[in-house]
Amino acid sequence: MPYLEIARVLRHDCVGPGLHEMECLAPRIAAAAAPGQFAHVNVHPVQGVSEGTPEERALAANSAQPLLRRPLSIFDVAGRRGDADGARITFLYKVRGAGTALLADVRPGDCLNIMGPLGSGFSLPAPVPGGHGDHAPAHAGATCDRAPHALLIGGGVGIAPLVYLARALAAAGCRVTVFYGANTASEMQAVSRRLLTASAEGRIEVFTTTLDGSSGRTGIVTDLLTAEQSASALERIDFVYTCGPEPMMASVERFATARGIPGEVSLETALACGVGACLGCARRLKANGEAGPVYARVCKDGPVFSMGQVELGPVVDREEESK
Image 1 (cartoon, one colour):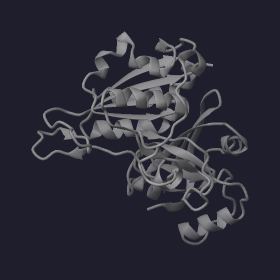
Image 2 (cartoon, one colour; image 1 turned 90 degrees about the vertical axis):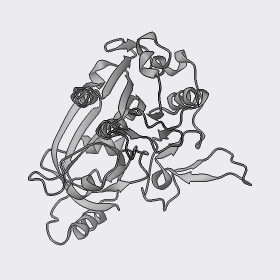
Image 3 (cartoon, one colour; image 1 turned 135 degrees about the vertical axis):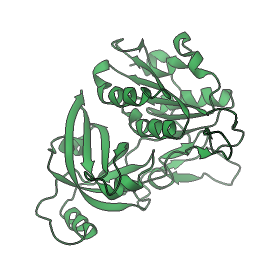
Image 4 (tube, one colour; image 1 turned 60 degrees about the vertical axis):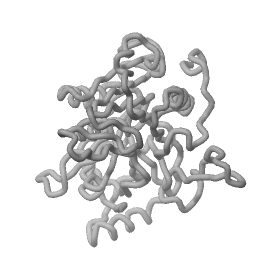
């Protein structure tokens, strides 16, 4: 169930070139959020709205703002409802236009009108009865004699929804391998900090690539699918999750399909209303034998879809993708 909250900004840091990490006090959204979902954020701080219920205050604040909200992936969640500090939600976003440029000017202590959590999130493992503490993925054919192994592949800011997912999978008893690619090491600070903290518990292994060679392997993230250094991490993969540029996700989908590994993709696209009403984010699904094309709303039916369900951008060669 989505909520409208007036969320106080606790922390807002520039963590890379054009890259920002923002933590907000939003107890109801944080308590309901699942990995892969997003929030719709009004980029103007709320001014002079202090009376009424949270819903009434949020609606009043929003009525004064003509600018469309901006969809932001849920990067991480901390705390629970009832905690002394309240449940908090964190976003990782990149300045891409007028809306996110305005958002980048928001300061700690400001309040934002946020609607969420929205959309369909990632499929998570289900407990296995008598599995000696291990868990198995919800897809058919998963084995019960070992902890399932999930591969997460993120490109650029597409890593944002995968960080919360990685922590949730590890908490559920899964072995998690993360492949993360960016332009340069300076763009990786926020993600690396959170993943390294989680990997200290031993269930998350992280491999990185950068185009300039400043961190990890030099190249693009899909190079890790064939690299010797990550070969052992690709053994016995049960499920693949990916988010990032569509050509990258198409390459990952091709990798998984060739090996019979199920998986999910998270689409990054402009979302006007965020609730499936305007149809501005409709995407064509692959032909499934029905008469005529079939479409899905990314904001409502996604942003997470099963691999093979959505027509992704074309696979490009390595030289073209790195430009």
